[in-house]
Length: 160
Image (cartoon, rainbow, N blue to C red):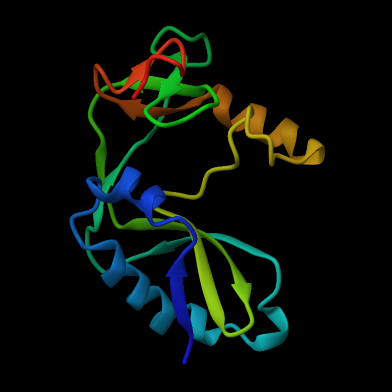
């Protein structure tokens, strides 16, 4: 049986309010329906995939925006030190879940889990590989993370 754990339990708290089904329940479903079906030789490196849950599981904070920047802006989300492409608005209900993590022997370590489709690393992410930068720029040029007023600032030093 595959065991799983959060790499940083505080990180999931950044997404917890977007779930209508507990993230722990979603992880149990992912283990049973998907992760347990991955054969051991393929349990290496990062896993970064989207899955469709059997019911609505939360609200996606990712939205397509015009490339001219008229409906979006750059700012710092709470507890983040890199800027993100943001927009204000409402999140949309989704059955999709994005899982990022890696294998440590028989355990699966969850880096992040959030309602919505898979998205590439943000363009300012220090872990973004140079060869992945063109795809990240193309994606984040027309996609933004939905935030509410007060959930972002122009400087990461002012965000609690």
